[in-house]
Structure formats: C-alpha cells, structure tokens
Figure 1 (cartoon, protein in one colour):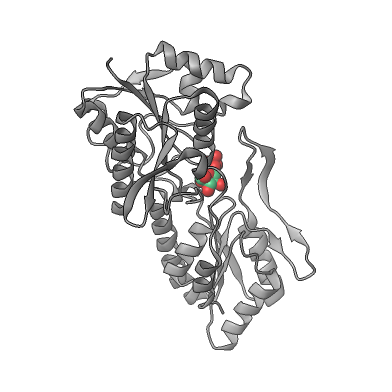
Figure 2 (tube, rainbow, N blue to C red):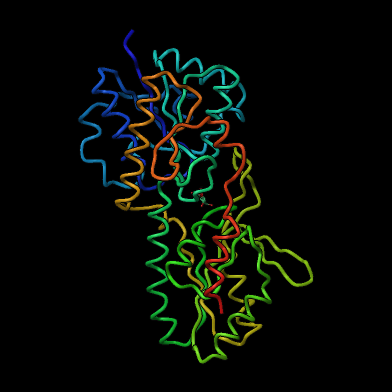
Amino acid sequence: MVQRIGILTGGGDCPGLNAAIRAATRRSLDRGYAVVAVRRGWRGLLDGECAPLGRQEISGILPRGGTIIGTSRTNPYKIEGGVERVLESFAREELTALVAIGGEDTLGVAARLFAEHAFPVVGVPKTIDNDLSATDYTFGFDTAVTVATEAIDRLHTTAESHNRVMVVEVMGRHTGWIAVMSGIAGGADVILIPEQPLTVEACCDEIRHRHERGKTFSIVVVSEGYELTYETGEKRAVAQDAAVDEFGHVRLGGVGSVLAAEIEERTGFETRVTVLGHVQRGGTPTPHDRVLATRYGLKAADLVHEKRFGTMAALQGDSIVDVPLAEAVAELKTVPPEWYEVAKAFFG
Ligand code: F6P
C-alpha cells in the first residue's frame, strides 16, 4: 500500500518549522511515499484542508521563518464532534500516518489521539519556550535566545548612556528558559523567572547594590510568566487578557511595565521597558535551529517508516532518539535550579 503521510504544524509558530517540514518531506518522498500538508494545525483535519507537498513546495524553505503550511491553536477535544471529524478527514484523505510538529498543546492532542484511537502519529518538538519534557531542546528556542541576547546587547549601550535601568520582557510562558539563557548570554544584572520568583524588593536591592559599586545602569530580564512577588508573600500575576484559549492558556504580557514602575518608584532610578514579543518568534532560524529541526524531521520520517507511532523525535545529549509522546507532554520542563544559580552569580 502506498504510504500517504500528512504533516501539520500547530500552536505558536517558530523559526525552524520549514526546515523540519522540508526534512520530513524529503526523506518520505525519497522512499516513494506521498506527502500531504495538513493546513493550520489540527484545524486542517477538522475542516479537511489538505494539499500535496512535493519537491516544488519545499524548495527554498530551509532558511524561511514561520511555516509554509500555516498553524493555529485549535484543540479538537474542545470542539463538539472534533475528534470524530479529525478521524474522518484522516480517512477521507487516505492518510496512513501523521507527523505532528508542535509543542505541549499540539503534541498533547497527538498523544491523546494515539492513546484513545491508536492514531498513527509521530511528534516533532518545537517551541521557542523550550518547555517540552523528554527532549533536551526544542527547535525555535535558539533563535529566540539569539534575538533576545542581541536586544540585551543593544540595550546595554543606551542604558549606559542615559544611566537608566532597562527592563526587558521576554516570552516563555510559564517557564523561564528564554529569560535565563538570554540573560546569562547578555550579562543581565537581574533575571526574574516563574520557577524562582525572586522578590521585587530583592530585585531592587540588587540594582541598588550595583549602583553603590559605581555602576550607573542596570539590565533586568523578566520572563512574561513571572508573577510579581513581594516580601509579604503577596503575588501579582500580570496578563494581557484573562480569557483562556482552547488549551486553557491566558495571554501573558505586561509584567515588564509593572515591574519597571515598581523599580523606578522603589530605587529612584529612571527605568524603561522593552517588550520583545513576537520578534522572538519571527524571521530566519539560526543555523543551530535549522540543523536541529532538520535532524528531527528526518527522524520523524524514519519513525513513520518504521511504524513507531505514539513516539516523538527528541534530542538527548548529541543524539536524536525517540521517546513516547506521552512522556514528552506529561509535565512542563522547567528551568533547573542549577541553571538559575549560573545566572545569579552575576546579579547585582
Ligand atoms: O508558546 C510560544 C509563545 O510565543 C509564548 O512564549 C507566548 O506566551 C505565546 O506563544 C504567545 O502566543 P500568541 O502568538 O498566541 O500571542
């Protein structure tokens, strides 16, 4: 029987998606299989929106950001009859396997479909947040860290010229991977992340201490998911919108401004905020992300070929291995304390 392999990208886009699509497609075409783009994540299977993916379609996409097959944050489990529609479309398109490229949400759906319906799916881990378990790194993360680091470097010079505190708000949802990595790389003076909630008072002490030592500016990197934490034990979460999406996520963002106001009021130092936002997700992937996504894409195609469904391509050390999808989505991969210790060595 001719294999017809569907590929979808779900959740927030990230640099490297096209590299993964290209690799999985190339290897499958080389085996004589047909490849089909499932458009806009799980939405494509709900609505039966599919299109052939051939050599022509994947030509020249390696360095391109975003995803040529579209994405969405669609959860078939939150839509009446959604799972049935996914299964029907899959059968109607005569697909024999699906490569789902996504983060915890997209792959959570894949894991559940596999567990409940023996759905023939393999996963590829992507997200700028790097919060997926069972893999050392997701692709997209390195590009986001590179963008954030460059921004921190640039903010240093203007902070120094004006004797200011610069607060840089980065993405990462409920984990502080982007903040910690870019903060270490960029030499941040304080880094605030959800996993290790340093208090606002302690943050201000670090800045004061630094200025007492003769420094005239400071850089504070704050992860969007950090809850303002006070010595009294009070916590204040900041979000743009309290409404949740189909996966139960609120839209984060805005903590940087609140923190900047707090710092200025408590320390008396003039403070500005920069919110990096979706710039971290846009544009061309770094060479590291291109290579990682390519290796994942090839592995996913091999897992499909071997009918090793319910698995995900993962990076462990330097090796690309396969892990159960269920393991990858079981819990968020948070920043380990030892990483934060590296960052803390340079606070204040
Ligand atoms: O998961 C990736 C991510 O960029 C998070 O860091 C961020 O909180 C969220 O997506 C933003 O989502 P949206 O693109 O829907 O605004």
